[in-house]
Image (tube, rainbow, N blue to C red; front, side, top):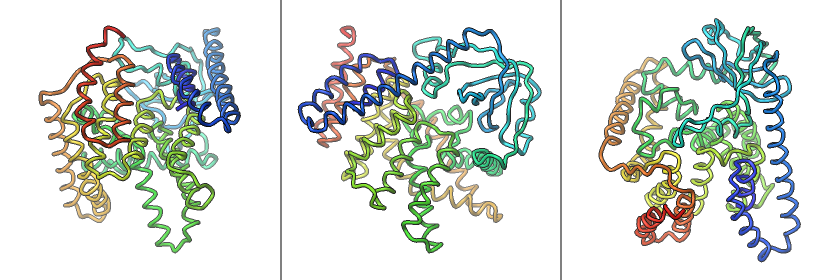
Length: 468
């Protein structure tokens, strides 16, 4: 928590978090003086790294502002681009290694998907513009989203020429190519199988997925379709099964899984919510081999520190916040029954969802209690069965599962329309932090009577809002 608060202050410019930094630092000083100098060195290294990153981003932004136009060459991949009304939008890297988002209009947009080569180089005149700020307080903060990924400008390209590089020269492009082929393979299935298959198994959510399944967000089911620990655990168990079938030693299976984690990271477009489960799985492999003897809490802390080094802005995104908060909650509730875990975890992330979505539906608790066991016991096995039997010409399983998914779509959309959703707007940060810390304490104590106090505390804080 000490380094996390320092990270949020330096990278997110949330200077009030320094109060937490000083408070936790005092706890460390009075209880762990023998390790104080090591802690200071670690914090100093992180401070220099994050501050240097901020200086580099600011310098790059000023350099672009000083030039009206300049000739650029950037590398991108077809899966990192999308076409909308003849306009191509994407993310790429310049020759200097700087990451930028870009857009351009032209005939190349219509032929993006026709090439069998994934990697391409775009050349043209670039005009830089600042990242778009949100128009109102409750809109999507696109500027913060791109800054968390290390992007400081948006380029508008003119007179663009496209050169497709040899795919065999780049292993990164091979993975991207496999990603595109996998997504295209799912298009042969019925619509529901296609949508849930690409989201749950590939981690690739279709562009208008949440518009078609609009009930998922208000009912709090969005975490089931965000690539995270579920996909990593699923493919880890699949790889263990493959290793047993091939007669591999356990150590060989574990070590080869390290390369599998790198593959998943590239395949899923390096999304923020995937970083924690990948590093946690890597730490688990190290522990199984005998390279470490960490407790679960120590392992969680090390994963958080490495995550902040790889993606300094990970805690500024809803994906990163939910991933680390749910992981901490699961760790505290590890010995509790599944129904108890679901109840506490839904209340744990409720303040965070209120902050990002400005509302909360009490029915989300009941829906999650039913949805999570249904997904693991019925939907995932049925989905896998449909994927296996469909290419063999047996369509009854796929058609049946497609009807189930359509029923889920209709049911969630209908339930989301029922009265009862609480719309808060955006409460002060102190309310969100207070309720989250309260629920973490409730998860630690695991006493039901704490839950009855939650509405009272929330109401008191909401009434005190004018004070803040």
